[in-house]
Amino acid sequence: MSQLNTELFIARRIFSARGTSRKFSESIVSFAVFGIAFGLFVMILSVAVVTGFKQEIRNKVIGFGSHIQLVNYDSNSSYETAPVSKYQPWLSELAKIKGIKGLQIFATQPGIIKTQDEIHGIVLKGVSSDFDWSFFKQSLVEGRLFAISDSSRNDDVLISQQVAALLKLKVGDPLFTYFLNEESKTQKMRKFKICGIFSTSLEEFDRLFVLADISHVRKLNDWTPDQISGFEISVNDFNQIGPLTQQIRRLTLKYSKEDETVLRPIAITSKYPQIFDWLNLLDMNVWIILGLIILVAGFNMVSGLLILMLERTTMIGILKAVGSENWSIRKIFIYISTFLIVRGMLWGNIVAIAFCLLQTKFGIFKLDPSSYYLNTVPINLKISHLLMLNAGTVIVTLLMLLVPSWYVTRIEPDKAIRFD
Image (tube, rainbow, N blue to C red; front, side, top):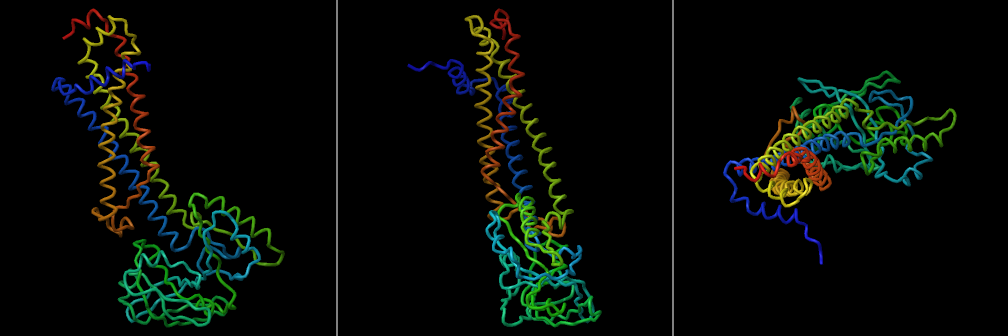
């Protein structure tokens, strides 16, 4: 025969009979439950929005430069790079590294777009047949992507909506560009045809990059067919960029020989540190928000528990008179508080998840892309985040309730039984 948990039994009876409580205490306890529900709703929403914002911005930056770039060690931080061969002895080993998702070649060359009324500086990014178009396919607002063949050169290019608006260009228009060859000190002109217009809302990158066939960059720089600016490497897990960069560095150094080109890997977080440092600062804001909200919700619950104990002072006195220990009585009210916390958390989860799903599906709340780089409020709702927030709320709130439950020890049975 199982032993009866007396404290839990009493707590359940009191909780189920709360409708018979005094209106004042009922309203205080209801407000405490609402505080838990609202607090959890705000915490879930804060984490979902901030992590969603970070993920969206991070994906946009990675879309322009992948996770890791391998370039000539002699290349500086500009977009005019020293060439390397696309045939490397370590390529087969690189493909075997756990965590590497893909590899593609690229080449860049800074230049100028000139129209009758305007000029605009750009970076022509040459891509090959191995290029992953998924990011630009999602960002395409007009026109089409272009196909690349190893046998013939394609004159189609992809420009951003921002550049198109600035220079008053549209799909199908010719694009006249000018480039300076550093070695020959000569200016070269290329005429392209705009086949598509994309928009990522990431202004710094949209106004800079124009995508073209890599053979144009080779021709502009007088490179051989096997020469490129470098390799772009994508990984499965963003958090593994640092270790994988080190692993790639060791691999390339192992195959490097004296008087030959040395390659150096550059993580996207190092290439654009100002963006990723800014995104990392958002984590501190989230922790501050979570801390303040859970403290407020906890104090609401503390006040509710004190009201409950004050209302049941006579019961506490009777329990003490029949021999109940202080900790046993404290457990009764902690159980009641747990029931209230769970009720509040249930409503908080339901409303927060519903709100997140609606925002993800319909994009109800809009943003100004010029200020936030996004059109709508992003949502990144993960089961792991929900579990941690719920567990953290329960643990912190219950720990806070241990202190006010100590009030039970101060109640004297003889005075409590006469208490009204």
